[in-house]
Length: 166
Image (cartoon, rainbow, N blue to C red; front, side, top):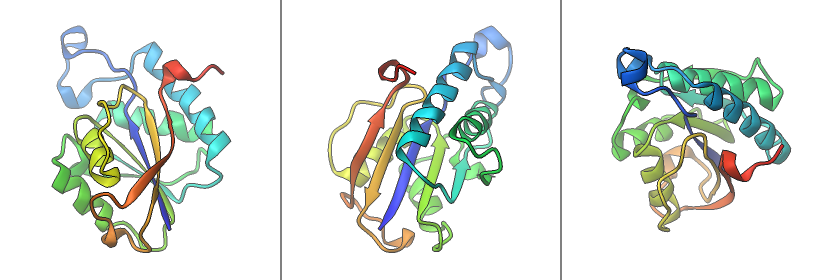
């Protein structure tokens, strides 16, 4: 069994506010607080994560780093994969299929609509789009990452920052 954690980046400034490219948008103060709170929530339900794989955009890098620190392991490996910056569902699948087979639990930190599409695809169930900094922890019924297929997972835990009172 594998466990895949889907994490949508936290609230970021709009490109109008920051006068920066989409790739360089950073988290708002609320986004930073939400990421910390969600990292603490994740620590309470997941005992180990082998690696975080994130889009290299500024907001996803910040989200991954804050969650890793709040989760309690600032040395948690974080890999940045350009393919996760605003990808298609097929691109995310390719990233997941290529994960190290020794890893049992991996967190993907990325963007919508792709993460929401992955959630629907892997569970075979309809879900509303993931709000900012939402986390879905999936139990995947596969022994290898390259074996992931449609409807091969179930949601073990799901939360949004608004649902978490820490």
